[in-house]
Amino acid sequence: MTTAVADLDWAALADEVNEYGCAQTPQLLNPDDCRGISGLYDDADRFRSTIDMARYRFGSGQYRYFSRPFPELVAQLRQAFYPYLLPIARDWADKLGRPAPWPDTLDEWLARCHAAGQSKPTPILLRYREKDWNALHRDLYGDLVFPLQVVIGLDEPGVDHTGGEFLLVEQRPRAQSRGTSTVVRQGHALIFTTRDRPVRSARGWSAAPVRHGVSTLRSGTRHTLGLVFHDAA
Image 1 (cartoon, rainbow, N blue to C red):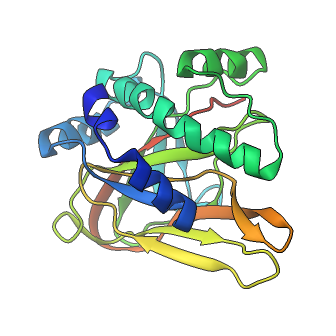
Image 2: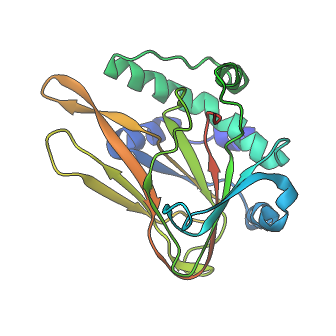
């Protein structure tokens, strides 16, 4: 998996993330890999907590946070993406005149999160069924935040489900908000911004707040794997 992620066209992905706030990779996981991960959902012992979105008015549907140790493929994916997202994160911090506290390795960064009281693991397995949806939100979890995250489609749109597009809404400086809708394909990863991102303004660069969600599922079942690169308080 490390090689597959390393072989992506990272220059092109970075350009797309900088332009739109998100970018979808080519297929990284085969259908068997995807079914292997989504099939874990009903094994409650794999997870530290389960969130019913309707109960918390987050939308409708359910997701579960993995407990440690993670499934091998989940752990590999999180480790593999971090060093290639790191240059984008540091570039954004430089443009916005912010600190860039992220060290060269994910393990070092997570150690800093844990020292600050953010020790709960954040890889997420999400399940949506007919009429489920996810409200626009940001996955922050504490003061220490990595500015990019990844979601991987585990079911095939148009076959396993209809609807359920990934939504990204960006609040533009002194302008109307801009929305982006993406169909996340099975085995493909969507890289997107966690909290905000730099956009050009009259004074150089401004931080544009960004939220993400999922449109209403019209039929079927949709599973996704979410990779957040900071842990939770």
